[in-house]
Length: 357
Ligand code: TTP
Ligand code: MG
Image 1 (cartoon, rainbow, N blue to C red):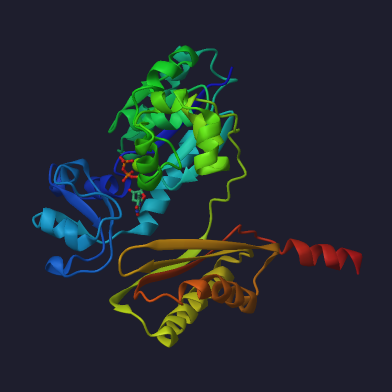
Image 2 (cartoon, rainbow, N blue to C red):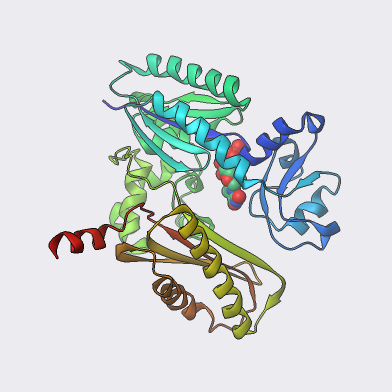
């Protein structure tokens, strides 16, 4: 039997700001782009729970957030600080896991199957972890405990903020049944709508659906939906996650349709990424791009190079190649970004070549 914890910090960026500014306590806080009195561009990174009462949430246009609550405290994100806080917390978490996997800046899985004999011991460990995080960083988190990553993640989401939800193997079915299908990873609004047409609204209903019908409707992922609905997830907690990536993105002051200008800005972003790579002495393997149109339709694409490199021409070629198909639309562009990941301190391939020379 496996015992997995999923830890997710509460309103992370906003909670850090609240800690840094005790004078904001109890007030709605929105971290994100400058609202410029409702005319601002860009989006909300996150909002504290007070601000969420007004309907403000992550990824919403900042102008809409301003409309919903003009009196909220609007702050620009301080990524350096959040990254430092995140590092400290991940270090605490790592110490309490047999296997550890950081999933994002404020989220991690801990496999504790060896160190905890049963779910009760895991619950005690989770309480201890919550206390430590609060003691060291003054922040709260929500923890889910389950027999696999899927259930642990759903459980941490179940009660927020400052939640602790334990779902033992025998309780999985009852826990999943009433959840809306959108709670499952990969089921967004579009898929949920198709499912609804099939009279499937809850995970329990999804579990009872005919799997061949799901596959005929959704292809391979249909089988995956069916598995998730039954609480099946064999994936391991893996430590291979590459925490570092270097990226830059920009939201234009005005939506843009001048392709030449887009390439100019892209070149600047690439140059900045390249400088940062040299500064931090990293070699990359993966290049990704992001583009958002005026109607908020957003796309990301990535391409992996077979070896680690620091070659700025390769970086530029990859970015161009990835972004090109998205520049041939009628729509104006609101945001573009580029990122390198799969970072390494050594240029593996070249070392090998040198050995064989
Ligand atoms: P989340 O864990 O998704 O959100 P949260 O921690 O703010 O709130 P919750 O209590 O619901 O967990 O994301 C972690 C941080 O990542 C969040 O504080 C800000 C950042 N983020 C963005 O910048 N943009 C986004 O769209 C999302 C979802 C998060
Ligand atoms: Mg969070």
